[in-house]
Image (cartoon, rainbow, N blue to C red; front, side, top):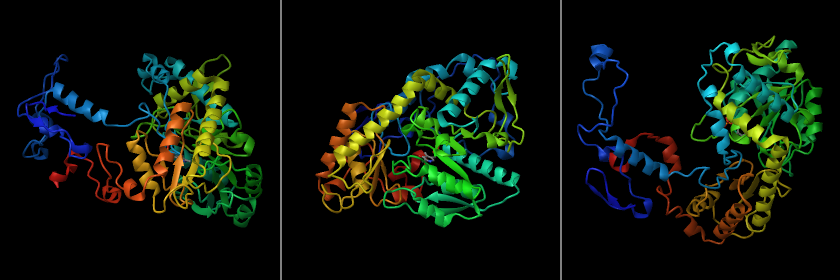
Length: 503
Ligand SMILES: *Cc1c(COP(=O)(O)O)cnc(C)c1O
């Protein structure tokens, strides 16, 4: 990227992309302004008229003074340096970063959906209520549950909601057990949610299969167990084969069985948490049902429950009357709201569009293709990377650089991830799950074509043949080189003056 910067100052091409790039301040010219069209007729107020004098800062803040044209050019240049699900494979295991069909965005952009205020009386927004009711109904069918709340705005928020439902359930029974069991391969949000809900976490070690064994579980079961949190397939991408037995054992001590549904991408239309014995399920619509996420975009983490728990759900929930119209209803013993209004409504609308566009048979194909892609990738990596739990995978695979048969010693998972960036792919999840040293957790997802999965597999195999010294230099071709991630996390400077010369 060479050329003269706006304002006439020459700017040299960044060497291997590692130079500090110009910030918006490099294009600032005193007195220059972006276009402003005063069509409102509202008189312009000065700061002095709006803010008490003692609250005003002595000097105006040092803001960039820039024309709209130069601003758009700067922001567009930055946007082109970003990698995204729209650009290519993003095999970040556990996170399910898949391509989101544009038809879902189009559907969610309908004026009737975007123009409604959430406080509008139900009788004026019957379409919205019909949509939310139908989505809720579909999610119950998909999970084998009885009723759902659409309020939680993320997976972690769904977990907390589910655990609060667990608490309310036990309280209703006059019990107050204090601990929740979680396998050691679980997502970090699980124990965090358990603590927030006022419970203690007890970690269950995975067995040599990478699964929870009924024997291990039995050792931890007593009257103080409020429940267990499991995901199936688990975070190693493996199906918990003894799930029915595990669920029955927890029910025997009057505990509840919680399903972390972030991995539902693997089982849509094939099996249901309800059939496995789960009582409470949260879903990550932004993972499974193609709602854009990452970068803090709004998610949706609905919670579905069995009939026995449905009275406790957060409310209000949409209810369909006999004449086909819809009203808001508060469940009889509701734990109350867990979000303002009705959740991230437009994320919910996207998920509903995705379910409609695929249909029941389409959703099953989604999972079959996700599992096929992951297993095919595993077949290419076996014998090159080590496979700590070598069993048929579900929608994601966990391999390791430690004691890898086809790699030189000393290569770290991080090096492989960084080198993959140079080959045009997003890195997989590394160092998770925690039970696998030097883990690479790869989720190709169903949206990638056989050609793309083949290219990803070839890139990973090629990288395995390289020397640890070379790999440690990667990435050399990206706008930012190997960052000091520990320092970046500890000394976080999320503003423009993070440039080295700004100190
Ligand atoms: C992503 C994920 C979560 C958390 O979901 P958020 O929407 O990020 O809060 C929980 N459990 C598992 C297994 C996940 O993959």
